Length: 471
Image (cartoon, rainbow, N blue to C red; front, side, top):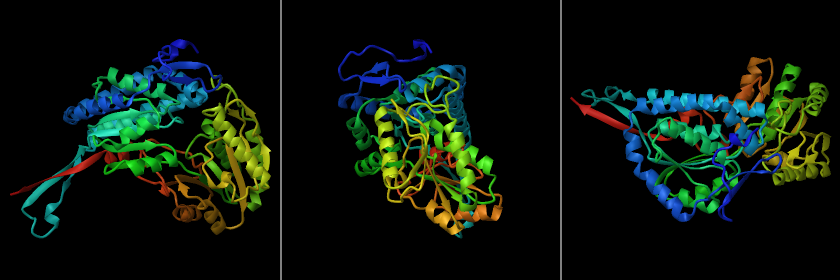
């Protein structure tokens, strides 16, 4: 890949500039100026001032811009995918799929801007209101603060910008410090497609910059995807404004004794190690009925051992680097802790820079971090169970509940299990990591706040306004 695939590249002009690194080989991709407190205040004021213009933009114009941006992204899909490979470490095949999803996210947002305008209110359904008719419209909130993570640096940005634009809002965007180039690339495409450049402003900086954004009374909503510690800090300091947060998970997958074992293994291997396991809905705890446990485990370990880990730019690579060497070392520490507590490491767990070979553990103590916490790494736990009740209890043994998977040929058991699992979504006969960009997406239990998915994010980012006419 050539240097021309990188946007915004420049030499460092200040010791405070942000260096963006290639996650595989550590080379510097770009130096970007970080925002000062004064920069943040200026950009907040600029975006807030543009809110009236954004709200006044006709829906067909919002839709046209979003569709045009999707077309531009399709034309430049190779460049976008290369950016993701370089700065996020995703394999080229995974990066291409992310670009395809981002195109769809923008198109769904365009459709939402045309479709979801409000509803007629049946006033005459209440005695005494027979002489009234009216409706509610969906109106923009104003300025949205979007704070995005590193693991899907293009599509998760599209999931915030697309619905915000569709709803007539302006946005101040703070992308991950680790992967800002993909976000900036998408913003450039939106501006090229016709979006006024003050409708989305981008700032870079540390937690102090994020805190200044979150605390600002100019911001009407904070949409955040990231870790629990940061989410808690945002909730504590945001004040009276709307919050939407997706804070991760610890996804269980249940494999019953009547499951299609080869299909369950194939789906679960992909679900465990996609994006080097840095996937909030990736399969982390796979629970397998004891009667098929040995067969499942043998096949799973065999397929996992065959995965190619290394340079994400190579078409043959299945698992690229984690976001940093420090992240890989932390995952390795949790593997070692589990093994010391009695777990067996059946394959993987070898470090080479930021690349951690896919690891399979069994016999993990319920007190270990690997069981209790989100690993966000290419590490999976596989454990046996004897009864349906036990499987559900183990599946629910987590404070974090985004999605789950269930494999069975028994529809009644599938539905019973889906109802009993406390999660934002249950995928039947698929891994926990299936996601369609139009479906509601969010968690249950601790940290659940709002839903993404284009229609649902659009509704989070707009508010009803009622008009009632007395005749």
